Image 1: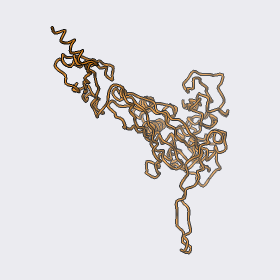
Image 2: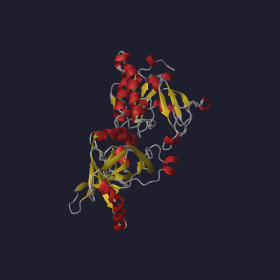
Image 3: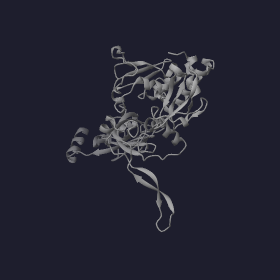
Image 4: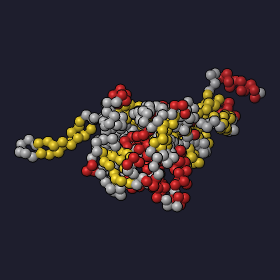
Length: 450
């Protein structure tokens, strides 16, 4: 392997068909210091002769960069081999007997990582996470641009908490204050910061996961339309609204099978698994105006999409805040169905309260009822009510209780959303239960008084 000092930048080599393996387009080659913008494919040539390396081989969907910066860290784009792990986890227990060379075709359902130069690892969680991907070689994976998860040493299944922790850890290692402004390491920090700015934001991450960087950049510049929202409903108990809880909601949605309109067209994945019809696309066509001679105008026409789609059940964790109400909604930005040429719409989950056997809610107040006998109404009574959080509430009255009297228990109603320390009131209605034989009951009372 050549030393890093020998891997000077030669030039950007452009290719066609939005594939780094596509036909060469020499007229699109660029100097090392020129920016390679989103929309062009190819690779950076670092070094020459037998020692040359293809660095940052990209499709059209990539972040802007310059080859001068990439060749400073060219060893990161070299391959050492496939390292297999178990447990459907790229960081799971090593299975060294199943390691493969760089050129071997690896099934996307296998877990492990491509070990590249410069301590780089391209993680693959495998199993269900790789079900909608194509087989790959580590030679190609190491030569390619790091995706945003890899920049933080994560895989695409990382939680929000793991993303934040990874960024803090990487910042401590690569921040310019720590690296003394080393050019190669400073470039790494810029890439790490850029990755976190996107996948650390729930909305941007959803667009990136669904449609890639090009769509994300276009959406930031308001150059692309947003798809319709997907509405769903989840049943919820009054206890959950009182105490707050996280509940899982299953939402069916249509997703685009990425790559099936390009280099993966005709693959087993695209032909056998991606069978859901995609939404139609809007195409601009020139239409001749009748009766206006040769006048031609542009018109939007709805046409079948060339993309392939699939349907999945998406599990969303709905955070129910204390004090939320029936009909309130929880919104998941850009987690809805995917339509060709559009930003994914939102998922809007509506809460539907289940009727409670004991309590009835009105705003922030709770209402319940207790039965009181005629004797208790005259002589006093005491009752216990099991509250929505399991506590026991004592209610009662020592005087004469009128029929349908209502007692107020201050501060025992529903929490106020946004400030659960403030609560409504609990109102207890007293239902007078008359004895079946009123005369007999009166005789018994009089007998006791003699």
